[in-house]
Length: 118
Image 1 (cartoon, helix red, strand yellow):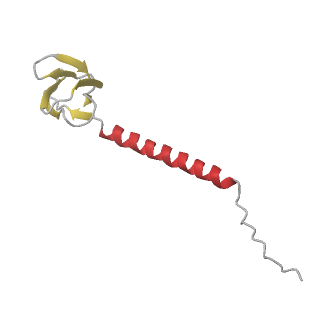
Image 2 (cartoon, rainbow, N blue to C red):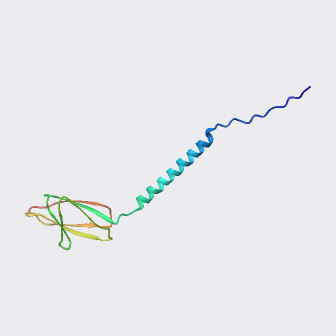
Image 3 (cartoon, helix red, strand yellow):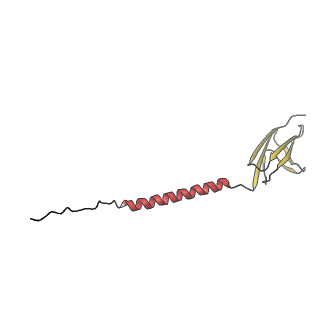
């Protein structure tokens, strides 16, 4: 009598396993690279700072601390980032001058000033 031997059949592997592993590796790698780019961008500091001046009344002259006329409100200027504060003066005919101190080491700044009538 012939003896029956059990036949071992290896489990069938889906053919998608390798493709799924490659796709997962690519997605993980691209997500990690994007995360590193975001971290680098957040850590970057710009060399220039924007300062936006607004006033009531509008069209007030914005003067630098050295007396140089910069612009008329509403306006935006760009200055070099520095670890100091800068003094600005807003002037309009018939109104008291307004002095403003702006820290130049922070980020972009918006300044709104209300000038008092004389």
